[in-house]
Picture 1 (cartoon, rainbow, N blue to C red):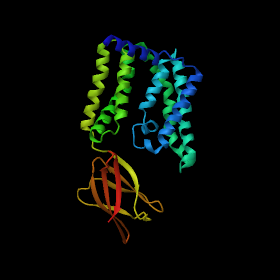
Picture 2 (picture 1 turned 180 degrees about the vertical axis):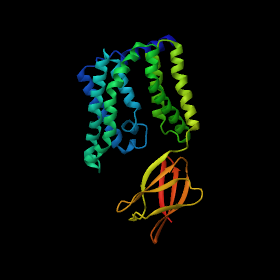
Picture 3 (picture 1 turned 90 degrees about the vertical axis):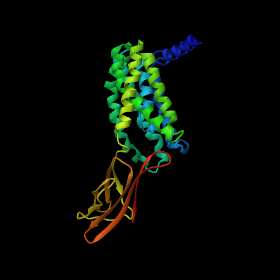
Picture 4 (picture 1 turned 90 degrees about the horizontal axis):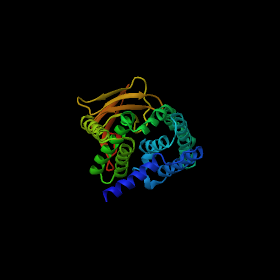
Length: 297
């Protein structure tokens, strides 16, 4: 039974990482198909706040797709070109499909800049990444950042699953499966596999224990839409849970909130002879997401 299981896994990895004819037509169809699937996950309410929605936000699924392309190319340059084109087609297409259904319209493409930079980086990364096919210690070294990223994701995912079942369970299992598949397919001995599994896991668990509860550094509009002047100052108590500063004055007045912990902070804004009084709450909602809320007092 064990031999049969290994044989099935070997056939799967041989097909997935080397048995696909990665022609240019295949690359384009792959890009269009993944873009449509991602847009569906982002548009349909049933996928909101699920592991599937993350396909349009984070990288774990795109790492999986990129490794498939790289492993099915014959040369490093082919790997670089085809991975680059895959991302060049798929990423803007995701936004294009969403435009007719979004209140932001074409403004959605304001988020594409980040993914365009990542798309440019895929060329050198996929060129080097092709060498994972050598199945040696260099392969493990090249895989190391990917293994650490995926391991951090599945550690975080399983943690959230235990706290708010079944949130992120699919993502966690998917990332763990990717780690195991990559180690099985692209390493040649048990020591490489063991190091590739244990070292990223130890690092991810260590970071999980030493990192802060939250890491908020963003802007927030104030309730009531006050129009602050350049003289406005923030006043807090002796032990605030967050650092609050004036970010912008005038018609679109807002504050910047910086904190690494959950908690409540009462603060006021003194603007000449006018005082605005607020309460800031940084908390975790029922779905496990960190939320920032400002209310008037």
